Figure (cartoon, rainbow, N blue to C red):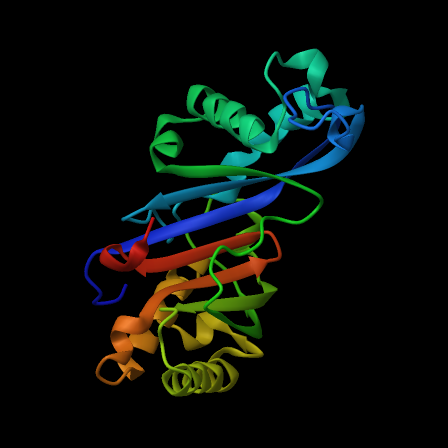
Length: 252
C-alpha cells in the first residue's frame, strides 16, 4: 500500500478469557496467598505477525481464531486447573500450554504467524511494554469489500479508534511534541468523524490504516526525526489492535 520497504504487520486479539480456580504449588514463601485455592478471570491475547497481508488487507481474519476461544471455553472455563494439568498453573505456564495447543490444532499458516500468546489475570489485556508511547483517538465508519457473503465487516459500521505512536525513548521533548502535534492534527482533520472508505484510497483494515499512519508520520519527519519513529498501532476495540513497523526498527 505504501512505498515503505521491509514492513512488518502484527495483530493482537485479546478477546479470549476463561474463569477458573487454581492454586500454585512451587512457591518460595509458604505463606503466599497464591498457595491457597482461589481463582481468576484469565484473559488470553494472541499476537500474530507477518511481512505480507492477505486480501482484503489482513494478517488474519479475527474470525479464524474463534477455534481457540471454543477450546478455552470448553476445556478450561469454570474448571479447577490443578485437576486438569500436572504443571504449576502460572500465567507463563498456561501461555506455554495454550501456545502448544495453538500450534497443534490451528491451521499451519496461523501457526507460522504466531508471535506470542499472553495470559493475564483480570479482564484487561497486558499493559503496554513500551513507555515512550503517545496515544490519540478518532471516531470513524468503514466497511471492507471482497469478504465472504454474510461477513459482518462487509456492512457499514464504525469504531472508536485509538492510535499509539511509539517513538524512540531518547527522542527529545521538542521533537516528540512536534511529531505528536502533526499526527493529532492529521487525525482530527482527515479521519475523525469520517467514512474511511471515502477518504482513504485503500481498504481501511486496521493493518493498512496503521501502515498509512506510520508512512504519513515518516513523511512529515525532519532529519533525524524519522529515525525516532519505531511503530504505530491502531486499536479498533479495547482488545484488538494492528501494528506496523519496519523490520529493522521492530525489536520483535
